[in-house]
Image 1 (cartoon, helix red, strand yellow):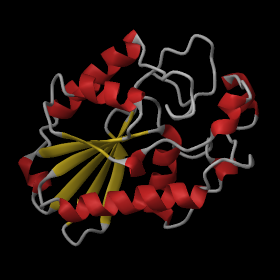
Image 2 (tube, rainbow, N blue to C red):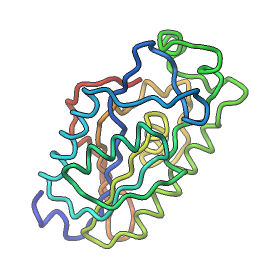
Image 3 (cartoon, helix red, strand yellow):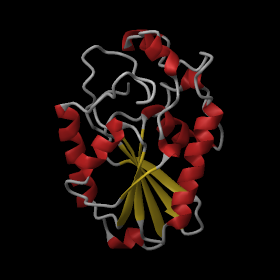
Image 4 (cartoon, one colour):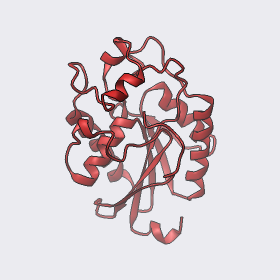
Amino acid sequence: MDKKSFKNKKFVLIVRHGELNNPRNIVYNRDTVMKSPIHLSALGKKHMQEVGELIKAKKFNLTKIFTSPETRAHESVTELNKTLKLPVETVDDLDDVFAPDPYNKGWKMDKLMSLGGNSYNLPHTESPENITQRMFNFFNTTVANLKVGQAAILLSHGDPIAFLIYKLTTNSVLNPERIRQVKFPKKGQVTVAVINADETLSSLYFLNPDIEGSGY
């Protein structure tokens, strides 16, 4: 990245965790919901190493990785840090959506996909408003703590990232019935938020738009 592009900007790299080892094709959730955590696949680890190398090649002035507490998120950070070697902080606000019912009911991904990837009508699912607010609050905290020219990584999950990006671009809460119709991040995808010195959003772009991977 050209040093001139850092001059009056801050950068937040919003990264989704890598591909998973999920041979039973279950609808997974938080570690605290499942009987055992779900892990990255060998391909997922490889992809996250490649993401780390890509981020390093762009020469962002990186300060820290903030990550969801889930095992799959921490494994993704481990692969990123084989290249980036950044300090890491676990942040509950970056956690996956709390949605225990599909896992507890034994849903497969095919069923979730048939419903448009949306289980927000189930009684125990975290609300879109809460997901949006916690992600947006932490994003703003991160921006406020960065100096001009610096960058940080937020590593999270598909739905929370989709809600955050929608909030950043529209200042409203995404209707969950449309969640798979917006720019839903694939596993291992990096969305770069470019922030002006006055902490307003300048632009958003995918660092790796052509990444192979699943949106689910």
